[in-house]
Length: 338
Image (cartoon, rainbow, N blue to C red; front, side, top):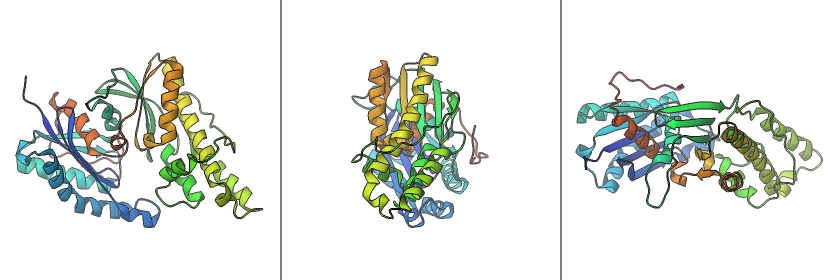
């Protein structure tokens, strides 16, 4: 049996500082330092995110090595998220990775953050089954909503994506309209679990093919609330759970309609979800029910691999390492990537 590969992975695309260490496809440690400071501003402040990454990376690295029981000299390669994301945040992670590469004499591996969300399904864990290729993956987060056909680890084709806002943004904007604190998506999920999903009707967007659109849904929520608080200023407080449940049901129904349409038309019965919104309890439940109804195999990552994390960067890098697909020190971050 050949020598195992140990990869140090860095994730800094937005406001979560991630450090992970993988031995082959198994995660030895996976740390995420969440930046609480953004809550008081109601959203991510890019400059503050960059500063927080600078403060978090070295302590996270030290703790990650300790938990993995690995010395820095045992690392075989350093992986990092090159993009897409906030350019300032990415710059911190990329430069940190380049500094480590230079000082340790270890190769650099750039990773596409979105590809990493998909490939997180290939992390090996005891008792967990990994999807076989090809599989369809619905990636849903605050910044991205994409439907991707994963044919191999390096052949990931976007077959559908949002034409405007991401699903996670639709959750967060609705939460803001309802007066809920940032980040609002998890709160809509929390309140929605106690409500009636059929209490109110929101229009499902009519978008052709496998693409998505959420701007109209956000607008319908805005008008819905505006029209109901005029006669009753306490409408939101009285009906919060039902509003959240009904709105959430509409988004998830729309997402899964597109996924099953692609599954049938492309004859692919391996289905996966990924990204921060895949932590949503209703999406997970409805996704599993859909799989049983349509006789498809469904794959959902563990919660810690749903939101931005470095383990997913590490697993994407593992496949690149064995192809010797390395980057040089001239590599720069990219806010938008193909």
